Structure formats: structure tokens, C-alpha cells
Image (cartoon, rainbow, N blue to C red; front, side):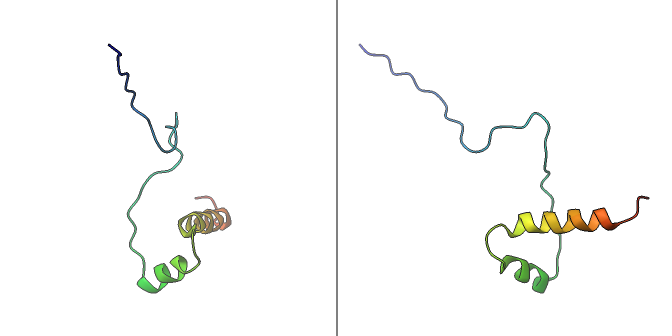
Length: 61
């Protein structure tokens, strides 16, 4: 008789040792959100880049 070996297959990105990003919930004006989504795939990444650039321009507190 043959033994059937099953293994769990992990899909997606491998886990990070130290989390790089955190999921958040954010309220935005509908027109702003629609405008960002209209830029196509990767719009959430672009929001992150926009916010990072804005933070670089702010004086340290």
C-alpha cells in the first residue's frame, strides 16, 4: 500500500521577520479616492509614496 503524503502549501508573500507595513482604515473624500483609483493599478502604492514625500517636507517636531 502506498502512503499519501500531503503538505500544506503556503501561498503569497513569505512572512517578514519585522513587519514593514501595517493595515489601516482611512476615511477620504470620495472625489479624492475616485481620482486616485482612476490612476490605475498600484494606486495604493502611490498614496504611500505621496504621503512619504509629504512627510519629508515637514519640519521635525
